[in-house]
Length: 370
Image (spheres, rainbow, N blue to C red):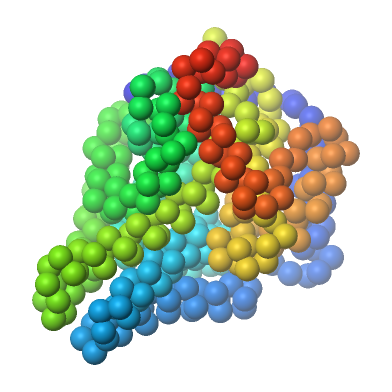
């Protein structure tokens, strides 16, 4: 779908923008540290990658009983999501290291897991981070026809039940990604704000190589090596994806599709009512920021506000930046949205899905957004 160009107000709460950037820069300067990854980030990378490699290697020995192989697939699903959250995501944002070659190498873990880093940079780094919650530019609002994630999206009868089946839809997200999504995005003529988008032949080749590599290690080799029936392999394979997909789908949705976040609409000339930084504050929510294990595992993506304001800063620093951003936001009267627990955040997400799916509330939401 072709969309009109969207621009943001050039002067909107300049004092907030200047102060939050200055305070964040001062934090790193006072401590003499880089805003990129540290030793802890390297350790996390090793742990996450090991969580995928070790169970896979043990399963491939053919020495494990069935229940242990299935458990290994569960662990691999957790690691699949963890690598995406905590390793690939930082690297593809250029936040893992000051060295672009390191970021490129670490970012290739994305491709090894069946996704495509080049397309992610376009749809996530550029489109989603720039046009957050702006329909239909933000590709994250159109993840599936099964889900209505924006008040401006077309409503279908089945959306009335989306708050009930959404977790099931999310569980299929990695399967969709590995086998359909990237191919579809590469084939589209228009992509978000890009019209007649052309992709370098080299990137297309890398996408194909990455897919074949993933299919090779995750499907072909196990079928050749493992002494199991095809249906047993299928159970394990689906288990890995359903676990990883559920985790990825839920975590990403809690950042933008909750009751408190807004879905701003540009005027007839395509201009947004706020400047970009303020727009990010209005469309993004943190959740469960006091939970250190969760913060570690999801790569700070429960600190979505800090991530959207400072995407090139490594996620290990988000917990320290959060009090700074919150204090400056409150000082300048800018909303700082935070759901205190996972339960509250997930409940708010389901409530929003229910509202978006009901005909009697659809017009109300649309009017409030316009």
